[in-house]
Image (cartoon, rainbow, N blue to C red):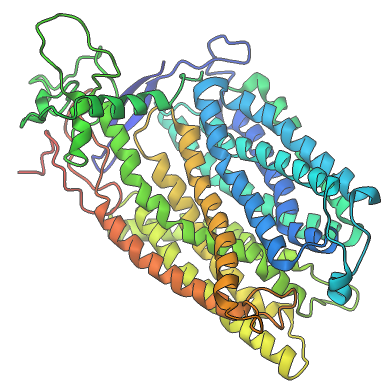
Length: 611
């Protein structure tokens, strides 16, 4: 097990870092700092990340075109297939994070499920290539009513392949970032700085993978057929696995810790078992309390080396820390008695749930950019030159083009400038960054609604087709909001003091995508049902023809929903005042600081700024 300690950053905030890590090489022997880990090892993981996102994005972002044109599903059903597929990928990230932290470790989880994902891509390519596995060819735009929808064995093969890809990708995703981070020893100042560089590189690799997928690979799918496109995705995924395996000799691997849910479950079981007990007025009487520091400023190293102080929130859980004096010298079961640190870690998880929930609507809006906005682009003039047409799915590359330039500018110019004003090491706190992203994403839908109304009126009233470039503003605005929200959410969860759960916490951030895409499917079905008031009135999204649908009204509804969600987020961000600080294992000299940019109501013993 890792030996962890506390150190203070430049602001005096107490942060849990690793002081002595036991990591192993590929043979299970202790790793050598001179041979294992570092940016060299992390580079192989970055290769997997770039290739994997390239492969999955090329499929996911052009999938709606395939299920409509080749499988002959309706527009609304096709949109739900895509959103359910993407949502399943992200919710399966929880499984990948759990298996990694508890049993398999990051490397083996990525390797096993990477081959599952590769097999899914191959099966999709075979299904798209063989005519007997698809319904008869038919033009859905001109003869949609006469087209035969795929059913039976053809549908079975398609969904088996699709969800093999979902299972593999979901389990691989959270472990790529976690395994790359494991290559750096945070107790080493130089390694700690390189860890920050790695996270920037990881997001850059993600953006580059998306960009290549939405331009080059989507162009291949559009011009050479989806069977070739799926085959290219399979080849790209294979390259990613080669990159992962190539770094085997250089990785430093953290051993799994056993079930990560057991300590959490123990807190709830113990609290329920002792529900009739009364919490002591003095929290220092609780088992494992670290609210006080010995007079010499040192803490017993044999005690829990990474401690959290007691807080007043969710006092019911504190009952798990009450030690029953029954006269016997027997040690209570861990299912009956927990430490304050263990309870406080559960409190952190509970407190972070509302912040996580507020990002779901953000990803519901993202779902529209991968479904209806692609169809919106298909109904516009895609011609760039006489011989070149822009694939509508490639419009989704716009946010990632923005990110490639904006992320370095953000880190180079905005952070130092904001740091002078706020005093925060990141310029603005993760919570403030998330809030800014949630605010801007509302205007993405406002732009989309205005543009769809303009496009529809031009097509219906004047029989004109607008240029596809008219819908780029909604993608540009979303690119900015994604940089703020997505990175802010990852940083927010990464900074939580929860030991041995790095991959699982990363997976939690992906769940926001999952719930957002599921909510999108629910909204599409619900809106169609509510707006279909009679047999003569069809729903806003019930036709396969956008000129007959009212996609603009659906976008306006999402804009209102996004703004209400932003207001809701402001409430929970202010409510969230939990700062996971604790006593130092060396000296207690730090001042009380707010890690997340909001006032922390808890006062910690030893904080000199608190009277």
